[in-house]
Structure formats: structure tokens, C-alpha cells
Image (cartoon, rainbow, N blue to C red; front, side, top):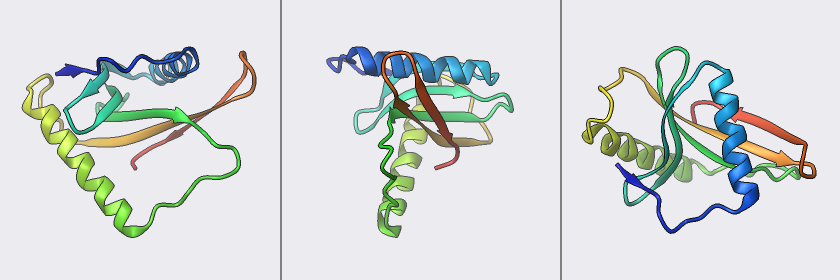
Length: 124
């Protein structure tokens, strides 16, 4: 397991990560890793949801003007990358191979310093 180094999060990004982690824990998740990297891809959070599914989570800001829909080829490339990430993580033997895994994204739109809208996109 390689921790993502040299990539310091600014104050807003740190608050977004803390908000996402708190949200997931309130949903019954166990957080296994924070800031994990396998060399070709970084994953912000890795955890097990309340059903025991191994989940790889990206956290990022949300553009309130709309979300871009990826093309079919972009979608295929993303899924292949996700599969490589899972294989690298399981190779490390950090956790036993789970029968189920998925990639999620948490998007956060901030309205000033004390208000935010969080959306959990499951199974990308």
C-alpha cells in the first residue's frame, strides 16, 4: 500500500474528504484506507459498506451547472482502469478478496464555508 505523498490537500479538499468520510461512516461503512495509490491511479477512500462490499471511492467538487456524460469508449477505459486498481489492491493482501467490489464517487458542492450538498454516486 502506497500512501499518496507530495499531494497536499488544500483546506477545502481536506474538509470535503472529512465530510465524505463522516457521511460514509454514518451509513455504516468501515474505512480501510485513506489516500491510497497503486502508481497509476489514486483512490481517496477505500472501505467496506454495511453489506460488506469492498468500495473504492473518489471524492471531488461538483459543478452545479451540470455533469458531463462520458462517451462509451471513455466508460470502457474507466472500467478497465478500475479493474486494474482492484487487482493491485487485492494483490497487496491488505484485505481478503471480497466477492463483491465497486467504485463510487462522492461529489460535493459547497455553498460558503458551512454549507454543502453531498451526492453519493454508487457503482460507476
